[in-house]
Length: 442
Image 1 (cartoon, rainbow, N blue to C red):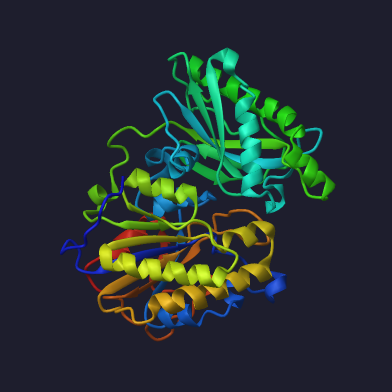
Image 2: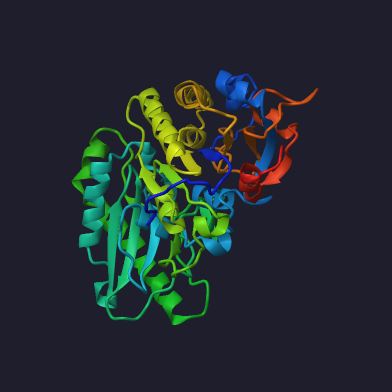
């Protein structure tokens, strides 16, 4: 999928959609009752705002706190409810996992549970090494939780606490993705996953979402996996070492947003929908899966290394090279989301400042903005005060070819408050690419 891309004369200008994962936030006491975005030093983004246009984007819709995949689908002009195959499938495709007809794939988190299966930490303190997660996943796969039900349960670690669970029927009877999540922090509606804040964050039982025997069978297998994982993970040396070191143990799995492999022709490819090819530069398997589903050329750069500034400069070079290759580039930068989940407003502020200096500085240096138009926004808000995704509007900055400078009284700095007063007004995620690709002046 993806293939080679050639800009040719298909588009009158080069365009880039830069998604800053979880950027949106709220005022926080640690950052002087300003949001981390407002508190960050962002001279590059401010200079761009001073020659562009701002607006506020409700990514999916009011009341919907989307997961990243749903937010990206919306920003790329798709309906995540009907066009997305689901988070589990996207994660599976992002790591090259084969999905056969009848399979179901789920996004997996290793988690820390107490004796009553309350979720103490859905991410194992963000300290689970990928190599250790692989050992845990191999142990789960080897347990054969549903062999007697003619279902092979395969578990694959991806990055840190994240992974994929694939259920494969070995008797030719297909499974159904129409089951509820066991992860108490996320609900699903078709292909749309959205965050929730449960009063009692307890490992949930999977329930069939329709009356079919396929859904009932799938829910039963999912619950076998949840129950079996608690038993198997308790016996692993990885967790014994973590307990001795005083670290949270990975003694449970949370599964969410199951899906089946996409059918040919659905959703329509990006080139079919927008009449132009594109490149996706991504860090995480889920965004790579989106690129593969939509037929965007795949430039997977992987997670950032220990030197964040160096990694951001590398991404800036990759993005500039992609703009020479294709009429459209989608770039996803994970940075702001994790400190939002961890409630660390100061770190989020510093990461945003580093994005400005180490990514936007070199990316914009020498870029011909008379031939290039850029949209900078977020896939969702992750307010530090909530430690979770929210439906808050996120900033949108549009700059470059055909975008006029702000008029009198318009904001010229990049922040949530400025975005709410910008001339682009209040928008939905599906409005972003029409603005980016529009031929007329803005």
